[in-house]
Image 1 (cartoon, rainbow, N blue to C red):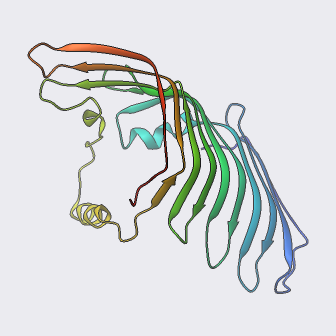
Image 2 (image 1 turned 45 degrees about the horizontal axis):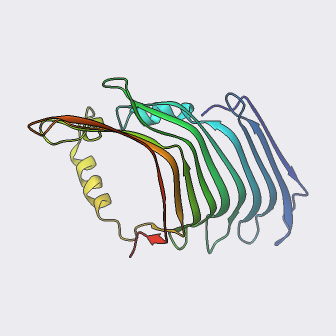
Length: 231
């Protein structure tokens, strides 16, 4: 991730316990993206951060080098935006409250260079994340014009299963770390109040049947009530 311009300003800095310093960060991101952080910072006796956070039109293509190391997919497009607050204290190192949008996302596989998934817009309304509680709460998820290409191959595997990047050899240490991560002691809890999907489409093929077929589903949508990962 590259910053085309980065300005950091600290004001009213003092070594008096409990005194607040002003913090301001303004940065230009690739394409037309921008980052803004403005708020207060207390350093003594404990670090306490209280800020307003804004990310506008972050081009997700800039994340491609990290993504291609893990999966055989390519981000063709996508803009990430966030507006909210970010706080940090000894009791909770990261507390985020924000509205999040991911617009015009297009993901293709690098095996056949075909569209895989995407959408017009994904909105995460009133997102509340607490690192101390290891919980993410979303008041509403709104997904507009989603698309997915799903293929069941002749061996009954799917096109998604072939996307994992297994090129990197696993050392004994890596295997041990993977085993430890497989059973997290405190898994992230995700709660969603409502989910809405509008004008979706799916390109579905099943090649495992005696008579293979393909179906194009369009203009589907619906609404789902409250769901949670721990229930």
